[in-house]
Length: 117
Ligand code: FES
Image 1 (cartoon, helix red, strand yellow):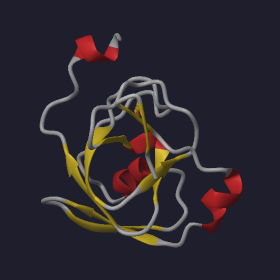
Image 2 (tube, rainbow, N blue to C red):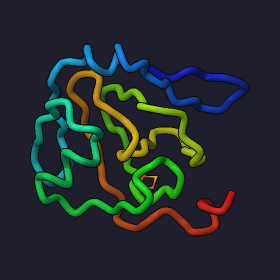
Image 3 (spheres, rainbow, N blue to C red):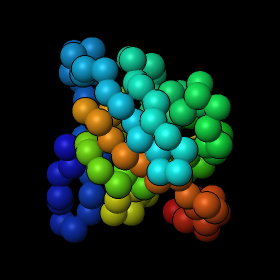
């Protein structure tokens, strides 16, 4: 679900119709078990609801507080995001799983310097 353009990874934005057609999916969180996405607003909402230790702030794709690693599977975004992701990273507040995914939570928050880019 990602396009490669001039060496930069662009997030695939799903249409509302595509979002509504996504099937329920498992979200495996390394070291924390598995949750099921049942059309909640985002991956972050599912993990929050399950009581997992996830960071968040803006919940709109701008601050980077919810960055995690996508270790397996595919995600799509509900809108354009402004935060500069590096390879293998996702913004959990703004994406939905396209089938089963496996994510790794960061042990440290993303550098504040990177957030200011
Ligand atoms: S909570 Fe700010 S980008 Fe996800």
